[in-house]
Length: 289
Image (tube, rainbow, N blue to C red):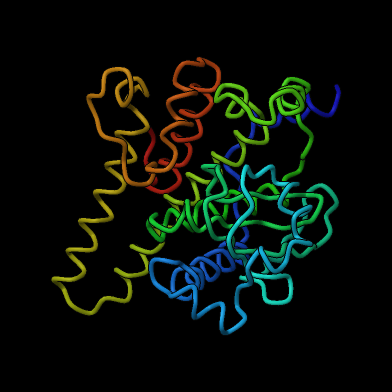
């Protein structure tokens, strides 16, 4: 069995990857740092510029090759330089079983693309695109960071021939090719389970720490609602959310609409996704569907 076929087989059979807590903690900390100190909705870029936390591309054009590697359509206005990064994430690469460091840059300005963030194996870096991600909720920002961090430690990092050919020919991908690629299925599934599990753990911990009965009841209702929302999402056909538009997407899937709509028309991917969600619901609720 070739490597790519072996990977797709593993993906078919595997349950959700259990994320190491140290990765979750690093992602959460980095997201909080971005929101408080680098999100252009919350800070003055001129102030960051004066403090040397960011630099202008105009004065640092030696980064052109770096940004071209990410296939941005336009060069950024500002960015955090390599000497003053937004942050760094340490992961264990599941392909080599070795630890490695991933540098994280914050990039400002209209890059002519809609990506929230991007990972490059060549540089072992992640770019966080402020212009595209700044208006998302904290939980969604965490999830998008986690998505790119997942790319850095995936067991299999190879692309299919179809995926590689589309990139070479067009420089971009249609939704079916992009979301149907095994490494992207893996990261998108990882992203949604991270979002739901993170929210679940936050509520469980808050209930345990709360000393006021009224607060405990309120938090418990929120937890019950999350599980109910997940149960409905698990049982309802994806077409209910898109073709029929009978149900609104739950908050934990707010940035995954295109992914879900794309796989809803692919029977194999749709069934795979549903099985993963059943497994997740069973693990969190302790109940079977």
